[in-house]
Image 1 (cartoon, rainbow, N blue to C red):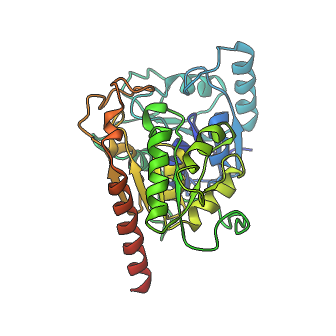
Image 2: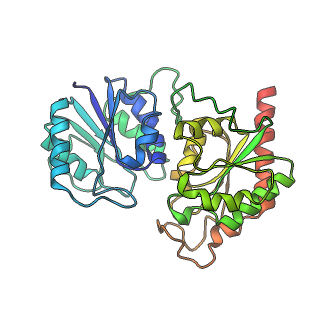
Length: 343
């Protein structure tokens, strides 16, 4: 098979943020993408990916798989058979690429690049260093450039998805609408259902048609959230990931925490009101490349903790955000977007 192997063993949002770097690697040859099951849906939407490989790594993810020697050896065999010319391992700033690099070396990949704070021994051919303060998108592009890639002419370096997206006209209101996505894979990064319910009600009172989105497991919570307005439309569990992208693309604005759909909204070019818990830094994880308003106390006691459950009673970083602030942010972003279209 040969070609380039890009690796991002994280969730859908992380994979979307790596998309521009994957396109940059495409200047070197055809790119395959190795992802975890949690990133498969986004991987299938990325432009410039020849094929997707799956591996549930025991060193990555919210609920890592147990170490399975047979599964690791099977991955080594698959990668060895593919005979990749080079591999680039993408990770977040707090992760080590070295377990993946070891697997790639065992598979005979002759050239490997990654960003690594840890001493890599002979595991890496390019040990890239990340500058402080970079957004995850820019950091990934920086690694791709260090690996010899370059963005194609006219590529703006923003996250993107394959086009066309599915027709979702049968799912959404005929009028202009706002999406509220209240859930997050990490609870500390999401508003409470009660707060999200108030936001839905406030948006409806301000004249907006509201669509509430979520996965199948979110349905009990979204039913409560959508109850903030009798006219709110609850789509939890009713869309594929690609259809969700279509729903977000049709919205004027998306209201969402720091989670995958925030990055999916950015990838389809929709402005975002980001209810951002500072457990991770906004300069690295805010919606990239689209107009957005960041709400939430970025100096709260939880800042920088990477906590999965809020470590501060009452979740004050987000409960300090008022419904009026959210409605004002939605109106401002929608107005600016309309003015841009008119201009």
